[in-house]
Image (tube, rainbow, N blue to C red; front, side):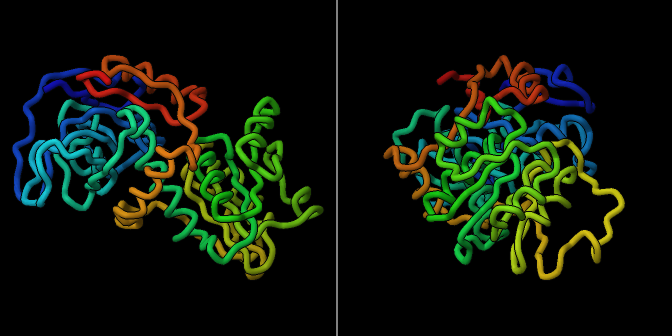
Length: 324
């Protein structure tokens, strides 16, 4: 089979298209013909050598959609539409940047949908991360308002859609004034131009109950001051490109009675029924999840280059080698 292999960290040019054997099916693991996959920021970090537990060579890719080839003991027929995500994909074992991928059953979700492959491929990991961040990390079922720091990212737009559906007042940030209208059109009640310091402006209005931090450590301390007492800040993303927070003084930097958490959960944080319900809503036009450009399999390095430039404007999707 054809697979994109990375043998050493670096830029998009380090991804090389190679021939390699299809993994042999075994009990407890499912073999999938990959029809499409989404790109994720974690793959960007791994490609650059910033995921220290990942050993090269490796086939990256933490999610995909496709057709079941061998269920590995599950009671599912060949040809079933499935999604696979996380659980070590593209990190502990080879992932989805290939014609076929072998994944443990814990990563696998069967789906009933008429969505085209490229549309479906934008959803699994994005919805899982958003759902887990909102409900496990932020406990939004007990909240009335949410600020999304990094609102125009794919996760940010998905969080906006799910939070509005849950009945929350939602604010969203962007660094680009040209994107204010798009966030407002997507349902944001307030849009903030983010120059790194929002807390004073937010406090002068109405502090939020929750903040979903997608920019990362550059804005995290400021986000902690955008919520009132009893508020929760959940760091899920690192769009700013930095893992580490320097000079962190918890007694000063965390306001009294404000809670700080993070979310980097697994597929188990969302049930198959919940994923199916979200896919059904998207298919019915009742949940609008913004997507970005779609690339052919042979153009994967160009897709990574676009991710490097932060110009996608939504979830980047790559077709499997067989096309749409």
